[in-house]
Length: 109
Length: 123
Image (cartoon, rainbow over all chains, first blue to last red; front, side):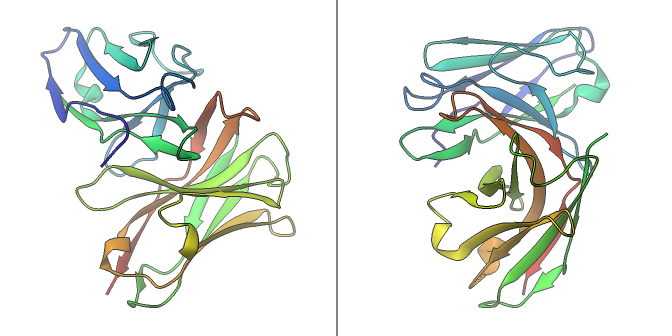
């Protein structure tokens, strides 16, 4: 059972906005920064958001991250067909002394 | 441009040891700024962090796998490796290698470069 909680699925039509939530606890999201990864079948996972809100070079600005307390969110605005993928939140957990991933959210466009 | 490439057998027998290598190009595995690690995804499951090594000797492992895992780095070949002993069908997964950037206290820790993954079946 994951220490981070995500909805199993989300969906939207092209151009819409989708928000994916990630809920944790003080030992992970509450005390450390959150990252978001995108998984497309057959390709290397991609870092979308690092340190709660930062977009790595090359990530479109329609992807944005936020955090409040022990919860974080990934927003995808202007949804595109190529955004159909799995999205994972992740953070270091101080109690477990390990890097933990959420269970993932499958986004359908 | 930093690139990672996994290699190793696609099938391992139960109770044996799974061994994978990750070849690094564009940077060096003895660069103390980075951790080099492994993540896996079992069929129908999410991502699971396995463990990592930094500057050759500092290793960290997922507590749930710690008794069976060794991650090590080889500066002569610029590769790092994963060994997972006593495998069972539950270890069947796509295994990814990745570079991590982490602060000392892990306040920030993220994987910024990934390999494409290699599928390992235990049977």
